[in-house]
Image 1 (cartoon, rainbow, N blue to C red):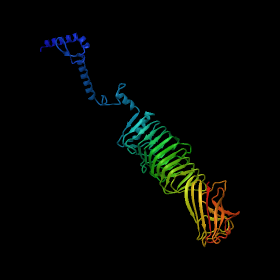
Image 2: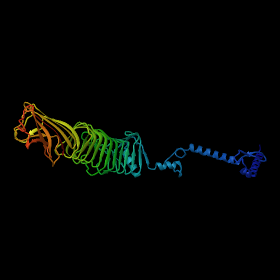
Image 3: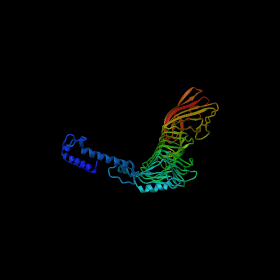
Image 4: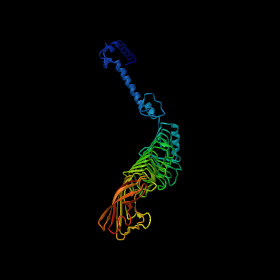
Length: 485
């Protein structure tokens, strides 16, 4: 076909299209592939335009798919600017406060770089750390209202000390989770996690082998939540895994799910408004000034005596591996606890359950020659429930038992000091004269605030010669209840 012939046909088609515009837009076959004309069918103009658009779309899609990373439809780059309403713009909005920082590597200090970056971000930023190892030569500091996330669970993201420093400071309204801190206490000094301020949170974190405290609250703190924490120190017998700083003001701190299997918690001088539940650790230091703290559903695994001083703390559902000694303690409450609990004479108003037996001791008189048990027997069984004590006493004379010289009534030592300001009396007992096969009713008395029990009959105290001459086979017995101090 010559160029002239081709130009003629194109002109003819143009003329036919022009003469059929009205027909094309009004006929029922608007979407038909072809339109009939006087010269025969020609392609529908609408279909031609559609084919052109689809071809252009194919080229656009092809360009997007093969464009450089970050500039096309599939890629994304924070450096790119995306039009409003696009996917890229939406992603940039989501990531505006999210920071991702991998380890630097090469033995460099990661902590200093992280501090500098996050200090510039301000409140509301989220830091996401990789699963792996970071190094620190300076203390990490979480700015106010930031949340730092580790990866891979409690030990996935690990910071290891390479210099003397504290591990991390978590401040006001801040939060950390899934972070592991290695103190390398054999080489480097410093504490682990330091919490100050209000309404902060530590979740699923570990502070291991710190030279100083693994977790501590050295200043003002309130509304803190510590959940699923594991801590230890390099010197676990002398350096507390958790330390409350000796601050007596009200500081609500809530600990739950605490594992310090080789360490202890020290709340001496502190604890006001705090609680700890679901825990395991060696022991507790609850010294002078400690109190108003609640412990529940846990275990102290050290068999050495646990000393509880201070006042007003509660212990519920605690298993004590060793004895508990309340020393100068006031108003403590123990409920559903496993372990032997005792209190000294300087303690009062404590409520706990206890039971025991005292044998062949505690029988005496205030003056003169005291009685001697010899080959007889003296048994005092007791059960304490809260602040009520029930006692069963039985004294039986043997052939070498002596009754004393009668200069003063007999007294029997009680396991707990009685409540003050009121005498407990009128508690009936029985004195049995074996030789005469005769019973004598006697009445027990405990002076207010006293720790000694005595018996009387007809105004005279039971002693040698009263109510009869005591000899082999004779018995004194009583079952009584009294209130403790």
